Amino acid sequence: MATEDPTIFASSTLPSDPRLLPTVTNAYLGTRVYRDILHANGVYNGAVGDTHRADIPSPVNVRMSVPAEDSQSETFSLDTRTGTYIHTIQSSSYTATHRIYAHRSLVHLLAFSITIQKSALWTLPVTVNLQTQFMPKSPDLDLHRGTDFQGAHYLYGKTLVPEVEGGPQPTVHLLWTPVPQSVTLSGDKTEKSWEFLTAVAESEEDVKKYFREGKSLIASGSLYAYHTQAWAETWEGCCVKADGPFALSQAIYGCLYYLLSASPSLGSYGFQFSGISPGGLSNGTRDEDYWGHVLWDQDTWMFPNILLFYPDIACAILKYRIQTLGGALNNAQEQGYKGGKFPWESAATGQEVCPEKIYGDQEIHINGDVVLAFEQYYHVTQDLKLFQEEGGWDVVHAVAQYWCSRVKWNPEGQSYHISGVMPPDEYHRDVDNSVYTNVVAQKSLNFAIDLGTLLCIPTPEEWKEVMKKIKIPFDKNRRFHPEYDGYCPVNLSQAIVLKQAVSQLQLAKAEQPLSRVGSKKTVF
Image 1: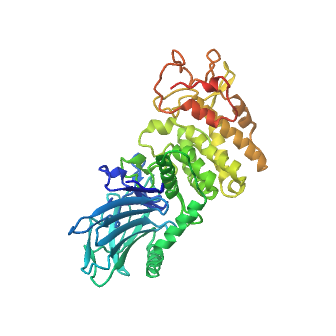
Image 2: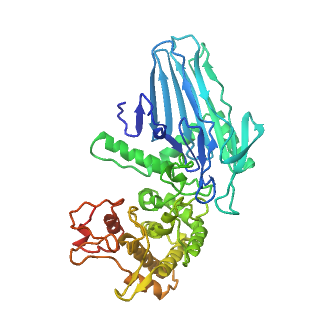
Image 3: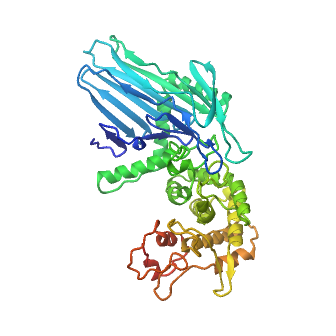
């Protein structure tokens, strides 16, 4: 459906694949519209290898319909400017609007509304049917019904299986406004709205507090206004205009919307943020979208875009890595190394939760990816407080220790080698001296040394020794950087199947151009 506003995605039909339905999230709560589950920040169920976002039954899974007495038109839209999904049914006599949103500033709230408007000439009542398939059960939570509160139903329960033995089992408390089978605008009125509220929190006290706050704002008619105001403040810090096709502008706004909706709202950090997974908070149930885990995508691909516009939000993302450093230290110890080894797939504890062991064991470039995000943050903000007082130095130090314990000295080449790894190109495993891995290791050590100097903290000479002498593979005869030791295409124009453009990634992260000639030769 054509629209002149690149921030609005509209259609007269819904996609046949439910995975493509719009999502509404606010970094603490997330759901896909018309889905029977929602997810909460940091709430996972299942032991390592089976750890996934816990499915919470969703009271906002409601569909609207109007008995057709005359011709109707329908519009389904996602307004990325206001973070709102809107379904509209329109006829010559009335307009019915269904609006769903995850509140941008009051992050423990999900809400939807039904509004009926009719023309002054239409004197008959208009009824909107509401179809809900809410079931108070979950495969991941031991749920119990509690006593109703201020007209809302109450459900609570904790996750069934901790991520690690003895680990936390979060408790979820859920309050929601009951949904009737229908709502009716009487014949003597021309407009009316019905508001429905869901609150989710970790305790009974908190969920009741947030629900009361939401109800108070509904009573004053300002709940949705507060939400749109928070989104307006967010967008004030970010504006990208592109010359070119309308679809390009839409794509940019769509990408920014999904990044921002997965990130904490400006100034609203009243909860422990648990990172951004590739599929976002609305996805991540078992066997879906990396099970809701946080991977290098957060640090390498998402973080730089957020950092440029919102350094405060970027800092909140880095604090997720700080709060899970204990798990990284445990990962390194289990592998027989010093320092910290961040997991390839991370959930609540920072211990490795990847279902396939080889990725967790070998994609150690994640350590360099994490530290690069910290380095980028420092260069953009010059903020040393994160490192001096809030644990940032502990992360950088632990990663430097890991690299120095992970390398092996090769007397023949007079260089340090890193063996038995998987590069970002996951089609190759058990390789030695991945050029990408070694470059980010070198860069991590360089930043650790420089940061230690800035903080007046002495750093081991070993860090400088390894940083200077780590092997960066380079084929002098053919003047290119091979992806790893033994990588040998017949000729540089030969097509080779790689999963990632490793050479280009390596160059983007190198401190200096590795080779003016070699840098231009990338084999795919």
